[in-house]
Image (tube, rainbow, N blue to C red; front, side):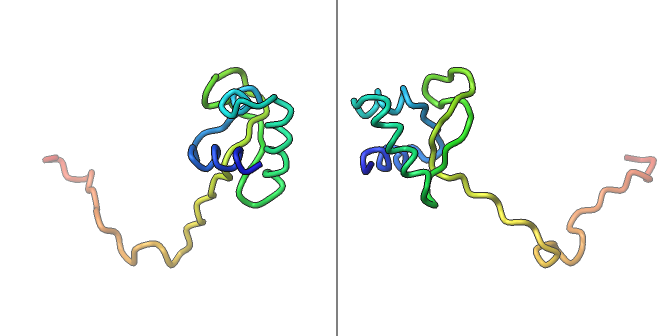
Length: 93
């Protein structure tokens, strides 16, 4: 399981299918996938249906480092006034 976690951590923007994960680690596919499923039970990793970043095969089950969702923009994050203003009413422009 540590080897799977280490590989996924080395490629944080990549998703791996069972076959590519097994090939990279030189272990049987079911062994690699069992470790991936165990890791996905925690907060750092996630399973999902997507394209594998390595074989780019059809959408299938992949494992990856959990992607962080951007924080929602609140009213407090917005500037108090507009910084740029474009005036399209001016006929000379």
